[in-house]
Image (cartoon, rainbow, N blue to C red):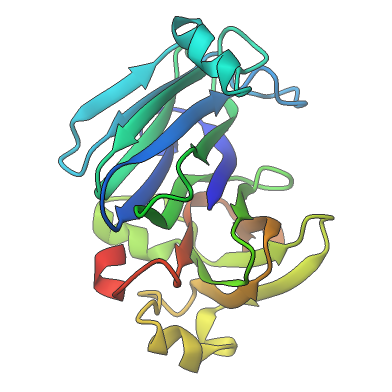
Length: 259
């Protein structure tokens, strides 16, 4: 799985936060990027910085302006288009990590955080990907893109979380998140509003039932390819901080290790 998520980048609770969990043995090499100015948007974040945190919250890698690692990123063909964007490569052991995109200046805007798995064939696997960001109105939705590799279908659970974030101290959470799954050509493959309304039995059996009935979830078996998960407020009339999650069920021994 590779992943990218687009959302508003602001201050404090509006930072774009991408979490992921590595399972298996050995280390996994991942390229990280924070994109802003090169997005085809008038309100993109002008100068995104990027930090990688371990499970304790300690910063273990970071970058502001990718030219620091120009040779490495160019060699990987992952060099950003704008010098104000950020990128680096890090090898991480099994465990939980967080990539945080912040704005360097005082102006909020739309940003993109990206993770590229550079060691997909190794024994360590990306088991869970999640991104927390501000969900706005209209086109200011939380967009999570991911790539299913391999040559066989992969079982995944996608979740859109809002009210459960209150327990983490987030007061401005998205009240009623709606989740959509789109294919490579933008076609709608599945959608859910309130996870008990469809696939309740399957979601519970995977031990991935959301903590609030207003939250959404989809279980799908996906062929290799590109996919997009979109989170918006119910009726597209409310905003707030939301969380989009992708769980790779075929890479995770137990649901407990995903959390």
